[in-house]
Image 1 (tube, rainbow, N blue to C red):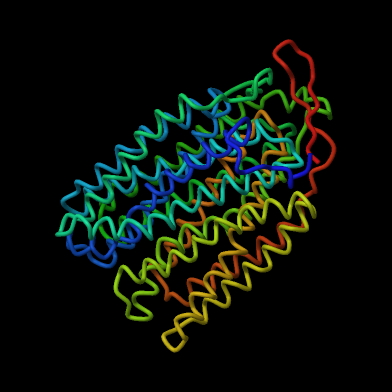
Image 2 (tube, rainbow, N blue to C red):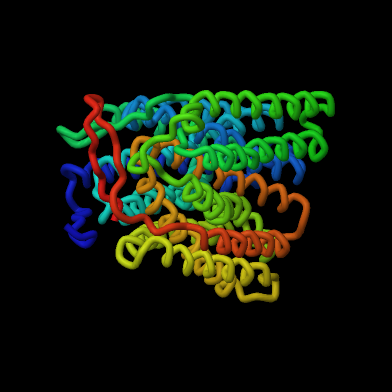
Length: 487
């Protein structure tokens, strides 16, 4: 069966699972980015300074870094059905906290906790990979990611109107509270509507839980290296909260730095405990996978999804300040960037299915670098329509690149798909923290230029990626081996 035979108008079997799962992802993004189109109203209501507003943007993506790692492990262990349902229910609580905030500190706590719901993406990657074969996987994952990602654009288009409907100084509170209610209700719907695998299929689980498994000593070293940027991003956030806005004291920041260092050492120790056998008794070649594949995808997602998170958060303000627009109009125009997710991310997956994973990524990564270099040239002298067109063109390459990345992720090691997706997804948030911190230090034009440069670095790393081919091996509980096609 080819990718063209996917009947998206059906609501049975694997297509039903795909639709229910992208809606779950849509709701997580709808809630996660419920603040972006309402920032000006929130700022006025809580009397926030510009630095405090930018700090909220950084806080919004901070917790998602460790959350995606943890959620990836839980998904592999307990299955996507239970994990997604609980995440939606728990993620609704910070929506209510933020909606009821009376000052910057309360808003910062709510925003930080709301980053937890951003880990939902990881769960669906595993769910979709269980229901679709390799030859359709890029397209299915692209639809899941693209249509779900549209939740941020839906928030930008609808929440300002909802806030105006309620009116007054508290209109934004009602709008954000509604997103929490939607997440809570859908958590119940999802739990009673899906199963982890098709009937008769085996859900392969990792042998051990607590750290990602690798299959060679060299891969173990590379895994430890790739963990460093995730801790560094949290340290960067701590620095911003301490020296940037004074939300935490210098002493508290120092303690956090020490805690992050200690946590990394404990993480490394746990990782060694999980992978101790690879130094003395490495697995047979048929059971190995190359962690460098994961490392390259991490770097690409840093540049693609990391930049999308950052740009979606700041684009309404960018259009408003650059072209002197009212908040509603700026939010609607900025939503064009995320609006492209409906087609571009599925397109990235579809092209990967047809023309190869690596070649597709090479073209799309080069395109997104050029797109951001173009956006760095936008100023008040540009016609508004041309600026919006440039943003939409750039977003096509960014989001198609994301689709192409996750057309590869499920083809590396089935039982570790949640963890691999979690780490790759976390790198997207590492990129967002890095880019948003840069935004607080430099001009909009330099901000876009920095993203373009990191995309070029990702292009160089991409040359090391190997095209998935052949089959991967997984072991059934009874010890028998199942071979899963990856091409």
